[in-house]
Length: 522
Figure: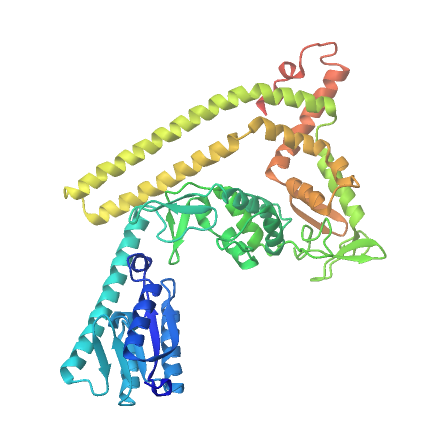
């Protein structure tokens, strides 16, 4: 047969699930079958259309419509497909394909595995077969969707997310028994990302570059872009819950961060004070707010000096002018930090010893609290088992069961949250406690060090202050939780040490701690 007289044809191959691809229905297997068929029939194969198992419904329909438009435009009369349910599983696409067939007597669709050809001259009983197989394919799709929804509902009720987890987690287990566990290679980056954003020193744009340089990659090996960073920072999965179709459910997976840290991040994202991150970044940009309208102070460089003012309400920020000098504001802030810091190295040494001695009591208290919470959790679990048996035996109604289960789940969630917070509070208690005091004492030295970077100075301010406002030169600060603690008791400790040095305990050789139990109490 002359090549120019060959009938032109296209291939349409499709797999709808990973399982099909792994059991002999792969796109490659379909394409080989259809190519062999085209060769046997003497067709001139001009194009191959493939639909992968990961394609969405919109993508599948787009590919299908593109194929029909292509064959119509290029006057191609034959479409080759493995089976009817590979071509279409809905009446709308079947009707579209049928319209194409009825347009010309030469147009045909060959379903190779079923040894079935449909065209304009197809007999009535064959058209009936065509209609029936389309209907069966549609039933299969609807039934599959129903089973999937049922499986998802059962998965959610068991406390597991019925889809791929976010970065930092991986899926393990066999089909029907898959669970999500922490991915040890990625999880540390996610923790770092939340910790950095909570300081207020990083925007989502800044985190893109920061996390990429640290080593965080997407599942495809690329950069985690701004929109993905934002989505991850809003993901409740990391503190133990998951969202499904707009609803939040408790999860059984291991948590990566505390609910407290998650709330801090969400607060930073929603307050409208997302930090700037550009070439004009200064130590105070995005951290200082107008005392009148509470909008972020804008900083500008004039003749080598940075000035801050409010461009929203035009309020007077400085004592005598609309602008305040950056160095003037920094001096005030460092003074605030110094006012809650240990007075000198000797006080710091005393605190170190106090923290070491008090840590034994902290461990004992922590163990007692942990034991009590675990006992309460066991009681809740036992009650849930009992009420489930009552439901099965018909002693209680389904409505009463659901009500009590929700109540027990809330109680269980509160206990787990308390346990998680207790463990977080106890983590490295001594080291962290000492570091906070040392940071306060050395804050001025750190901030004014000529080798310190802008980010390091911004980080120090983030550790010390949760909010800073200024109006007419009046600077008001709100300390973070840790520094607020210092503000409450460090002046007392400094005063007691002064008394010891001058009068009260002069000549004592023992440590300061036993002489002054106020330290241990705090």
